Image 1 (cartoon, rainbow, N blue to C red):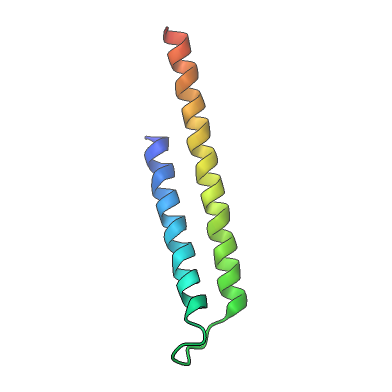
Image 2 (spheres, helix red, strand yellow; image 1 turned 120 degrees about the vertical axis):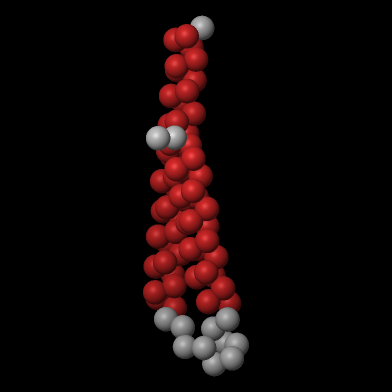
Length: 73
């Protein structure tokens, strides 16, 4: 199990989720689309939390690799 690869995938997924919500909000007044603004804002906040969580995993994995390299040196 590679935590860096998993965190990268999580970042990509969260960014995609944010982009989808942002596109819906941007298209609200175009073409008469019925968009639930509250739901889209909640989805964007969840995507933001996903980015933060996966970034924390990346930072922790980097620190752990640094400690292992220090131990082996």
